[in-house]
Length: 236
Ligand SMILES: [Zn+2]
Ligand SMILES: [Zn+2]
Image (cartoon, rainbow, N blue to C red; front, side, top):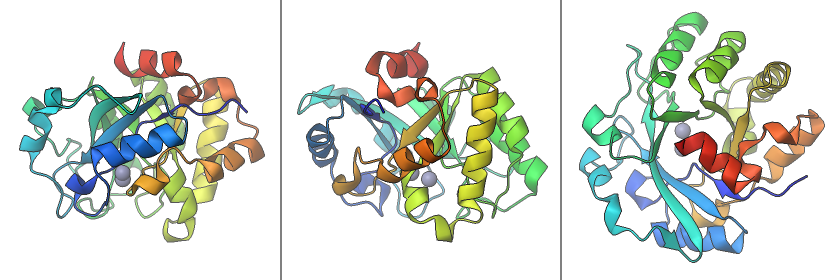
């Protein structure tokens, strides 16, 4: 398989329950042959995460660290009314946004309503990725989700960290099998991310790569095995 060269979902100490700095994440990314990374702290709603004011000053950070291009996003919570947990004025400061459901600030509203809420967030032009759509504690309708991913130009994520702790996420593996089958059938790209909360996890996708191979998912539909393809998808 073509090697992965980008990792667009990770957290630093600013997220409150992650343990590296931006430089340590970039240094580890360089050691793991990443060409680009995205730092994506949690948005409001996750205990201990940064104040939104954090997102206003990214221009002071060098665009390249240790030879790795560093982008800045946010993993923004999907809320029960179908809105994002970060105010628009901060979203505009991001290179891109990730939308994700977290049970810390979301009550399961049933499969169809959860899907409606997530899709309504995917319609925001800055949202380019959906994080870990894999947990039946907040079930999703994958037929509708994959169609919406295509229509809104948003990548569904295969999350290495979910695959590592799949026993704590309800029906995680089955849900990913369904998601990959539908993405393959509908020619819809996905992204593989580490969701690293420590520098040691950056750019490592061992479980995800094995899962892709087991499910015979075509590598042309993986966004982060080519820098140009990935940047074109996220930023054009
Ligand atoms: Zn998450
Ligand atoms: Zn995350």
